[in-house]
Figure 1 (tube, rainbow, N blue to C red):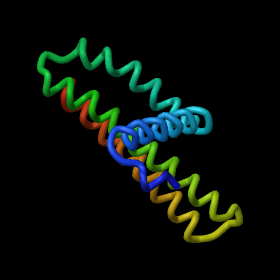
Figure 2: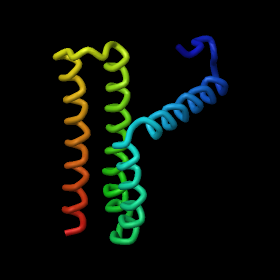
Figure 3: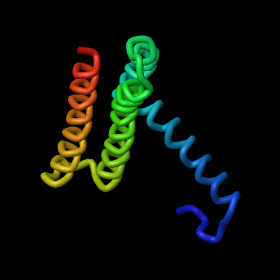
Length: 119
């Protein structure tokens, strides 16, 4: 647990270091995150090139950023469930399945956003 006594800029600096460690961990251990990051790298220039307004760009790029955010949360939940125990348990499976469904829903939302704006 982080030192609760740390305040001010040191707390902010520590939070940035913890976030960096989180990005390193998800990059190293989660193939889905790496694939979605590749999607982000490919679609961001496309969004800039194919759209005329800042709002359209924001919606297209933001929909992919949302996928990345939900994938980070999904990966965190999976790590916690696995930490609790590797034996098969109905509630553990349900939690992982629900988190996976959140990622799938977000991917579908991104696809619909792209289709509506580009069509």
